Length: 414
Image (cartoon, rainbow, N blue to C red; front, side, top):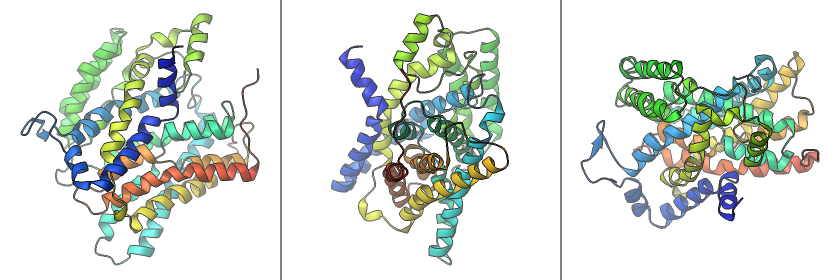
């Protein structure tokens, strides 16, 4: 492997573009807030140029077009998890992690509303602030995977437990965004999904039946039409590929989002390379690098929060992620264990507690949801986004718990 490819792998593995984007956004927004907003709202193709009645600002291009591929890759992972060998197939072995996923939603929402009632009861903005309940339900799948591997090692069952939980969490998050966070100034018009997105799904189905073995036609024809349906229906167009990706022909087994290049090469030389040629796998394989690098721009466009904007909403989001995830996931999974749905072999309560703390890393999706929960003119968007950024502290909590419990990385046997 060349030094260039090694560098790219390091950038991806440690989510460095995302982290760099957050840092750059915070620096620019606090040094020169006006310049930051000018950059984010810059009309890339000139004043007056619009797409579907939306100005083509940097923010729109990133959140409404680029993030289509981010959520498309999330949909790919959910699709593959349902294949033989995947974490959702057969469903019985996924019950405990899925119970944990429910806890990872119920716990943060419960903490958020408890704090909302305690701090803002009777406040004139109570209803507006309540709209932020969906923000702490998110888990950043890439960062969670990174921290889990550092704490548990590559092959510990807690890593797969957490990955399944994060994938299912993202699936719930997609539903929350679609159902609860439409544009309040433009009520949802779901009939446009019938006009555009349903025909797009039919096109994707026909392409599959015709055995089209390239992912681009699915995205170019069905994906674009679905995007038009979502934006016309006043639902977030970043979700446009979610109903399309499952139609891409996939491998006969799950291959995993984070299978390393060395593992892929090893399988190829062993003759087990069917998944390399499936459109579903190639979609992720071809797009993951540009998406990972592009997360710099997503973070820059969404994480620019002035430190002066920190208020009680910030701490509500942060506490909901750090405390709500640990309490919710641990409780629901522990109850599952008691009623006959065990944790994976080799995983005990101490591993569950640490995995639950790692799940509090909400950064990417939490930032995205914060922008939808509190529109640009809301005085609570900045504080909420700061809470999402500070959720990076979940990694510190997880490392501290691991040290207390004496958990050390478990590597694959030679």
